[in-house]
Image 1 (cartoon, rainbow, N blue to C red):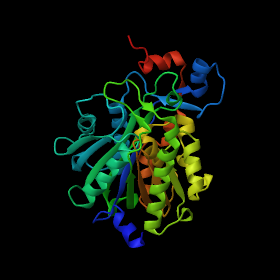
Image 2: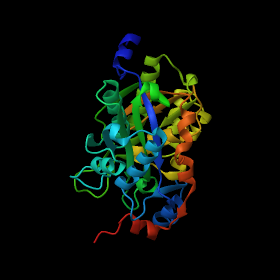
Image 3: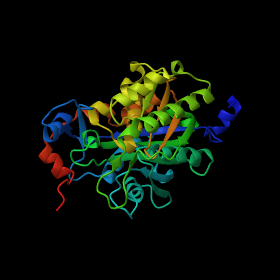
Length: 357
């Protein structure tokens, strides 16, 4: 395939667009992976992460999305009435029929003159909403569009997913390029029908095909999307100061980074899964917010999400001088991660409604 054909496959809006505001949210409760192991294996064997974030009894995707969105608005300092789309990507919307996005839009003051919708594509629901926001703003249909990736991900008691399935996420406000703290130079997506993870209607917990989760699921899509985007943009790993990949655990993103030529130093700020778990729809986006909290003007960032089923979205981003104006206007991602209250398995069971009568 020629470089010309690759460039044609990129998603690049007609008008320059970028991130004018961003925000994260992580609930304060943490359950150590060793506590989960104690319950199900007697503490035998290793654990994939240190601990994971757990939402409290009064928290769900709606409340957490509102917090992250308010942080994004605090940084952008725009009138919420100028937002023409509010999109929330999640695997754990509290209602099967009743949009999360309308409640978020109401809470942040964006109603009634806005479009709202909930997005779904496993763990990449938030980044596909970002791509739609790029199109909305880049076409001139909107000045601002808000994209959120947030989850209170579920894992069956005793299942491998229970060790990592966590709560939290991020919001990204997309706007005109001239106002952006982060320019979005381009994006690329690839999808295939790979049945590595699924949950049927009315099922309490997701199922997964263990042997498919790495290959041909995660690595095929993450590496494929990243390589395609970098070749189309004429870049290599050395051209980026930072990179962030979907984080189902600590090992997968580190292996993907190494295969693509990235160093541990390039991915370390955005590698949050060992400390808060896999926040699913918000995994990549919250990693991006952690990078933006420390990045400098001129820094380039590669972000690649992954959603089971399966697909990846890759983004080429560049930090602008405006980052220094907006960064300190809201709570940092590190501050959310650092404020923690440890809970035991019994409390976790109560918070996550694990006991079914």
